Length: 369
Image (cartoon, rainbow, N blue to C red):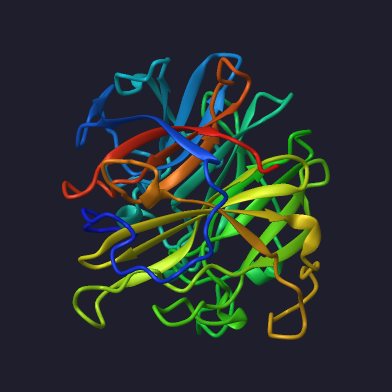
């Protein structure tokens, strides 16, 4: 998602009031940057929308959301070792393959019947050694969000079936909005289930957020990886846009940019907002998926026909001591810290824009009492 097209302002400027977070749950450990349009093995690095840590190989996997325009769809491999003084060192690039093999085509050259992925999140599938990844799709060309599985070398192994509600509607009366599809992906610790998070509400579920009101609920869908089918779905309501654009009526948005499991049932949800001239806002929430009702069989979400997930603020990134807030879209657990606590790692998507940046940040995470 191309939020934060001029993300030079710190989040929090003109922000609306939010409940205070539990103090000290995130503590900044490190911050580092890649230079704009870093060349890695002949490719242009940027647009990093997904991050995953491979504990067996001590390396990070970084998914680019380039729609094969600069280079074919790909992910990068990098190492970032303690004390994290230097930026992550890139060690390789892997090209994601299309059905039948070969690179995905650039959007501007693709045949009408050929989808072009807009990759947004990736996770390692425990035990299988494969990669699961999402794309927001290309609603304008008739393709909805998708969920794929690939080998580590990029070969496409398969695509998961999704409920019909995620099919695009040419008339735009229902279904996903363009560029607001599967932005987040999380796996349960046992590796049996994947959660897919829509960035914004389906058209039939309500409007997008404004600076005055929250929008419709986002659907979070749990997929049984053994059967390949959706098994459950819950609703989550992102905040109203917490920043006001400097020019009234100019671009502003808020939605889910990534999710991550805390345990079998609890989930972290990262909300990323942008407002023209005001910059970005990043808020991390915790939910318990068991507390929300199952909405998989509900065609259109409306007040009274479901119970959305209650959320607890973990941290507002504006208070964490970062030098800037940008378009953060990737989030994963890093290696365990020496004291046994978890390390949370995030990365921002620079949209290949020189006014933005590829920012890596690491935090010590403390669970709530």
